[in-house]
Length: 374
Image (cartoon, rainbow, N blue to C red; front, side):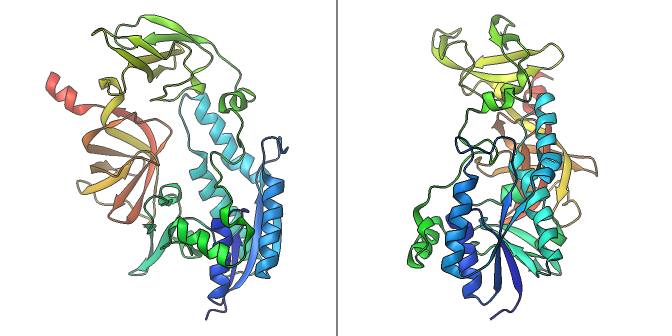
């Protein structure tokens, strides 16, 4: 039995609720903390904050724990949302959940908990922390379908040393059963999806409130033929199929009807380039350069070693070589071309179950094709 005090980040969902329950059963002194991170339009039409807080209080009542409500909206706007907008202005596609974890959930929240005298924090993330030779490692969760280590790759040693992930070895079905057996009404609550401050609203409409439309041309990548007009490069991302406004499918040079996909952006000319077909060569790249690196061990892994990488959350682990790495950037060469490597997204490096860290994709190219051409 532990006598340590842990502050659990409660969101109102089943995962964080079960995390708190398990820690209490293990003998920890548990306190809940509910974070309010968004205020711009916190109405019931798009934001579930009010209902989430009601659910948190109900769970806390069953568990017999206290809950503190903390407003991190100013920190969120300064550390997360400002960069979110800057990235879109630059034509990239950011992942704010990664930044929210490193800056809010495991920094502002952790600092607040330690100031209260807690020994550490816990969340309902599906990941695992392990100590190895005096250092803390971040591991994939036991449930590969729910693993969230991708979103946590920017955590450092100081953060991991103070963090518990009680759901590390559980799958979602087991978590819901534990909640139901304990009488928690959130046992069957639907998982939240998307970015927390956007909710269920149309993403383009939300972004347009902060980044006004800037109309430009849509051109075909293969021959530069004009196809239509876009409202702004920031509203589109590589690999996007829907919402282009140029028809769902069109006949290609071979006479087949294939869908259009975003394949590139010319920022200087404000031109959006599209191609036909999911497997068009323009969407495939086998090398990427990443910057703004973050390594969990505090130092970069060895180059020229075979690793696996996730260039997006739901992608399969892709075998790759860390071709070069320094303080500013790293280069990854993939064994097989990857689809729609997107500037602004995170690429996360793994060695087995161990998450090594990663960075933000800056650019990508197809070196195999260049070698053939040479």
